[in-house]
Amino acid sequence: MALNLDKNLKLYYSISEVAEMFGLNESTLRYWEQEFPMLKPKTKGPSKVRQYSEKEIDQIRLIHNLVKVRGFKLAAAKKILQSNRGGADKTAEVLERLAAVRDELISIKKELGGME
Image (tube, rainbow, N blue to C red; front, side, top):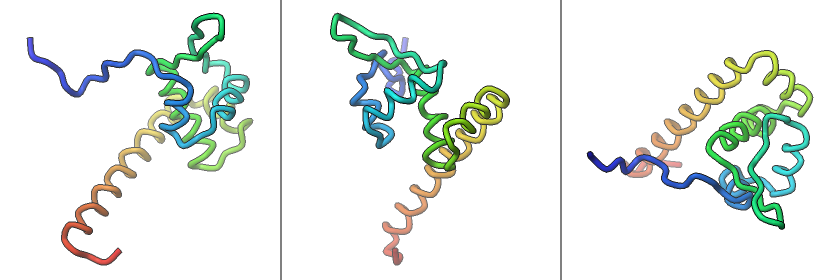
């Protein structure tokens, strides 16, 4: 059996790790948990430390795309996620790919000595 180096071995992420992934405050994530019922991280121990799985991170990625990237209000983002979940998923995926391509092109341009 071959070792899969691409596979993410971490099952859960702390709220600070997730906040850093998206450039958000931890308080923003806590607020989104109240506003979006599908976002329910696991809590552990008496201090109720939040643990986010890949499923919750995918939810946050969609919410982040709608609210922070595309500029929707929270109510509009909720409505989109309720009525057109598949479309929101696809759009977020396409935008992520385009951003990755843009970053790659910028990197190539810098390597070739082009102007910024």
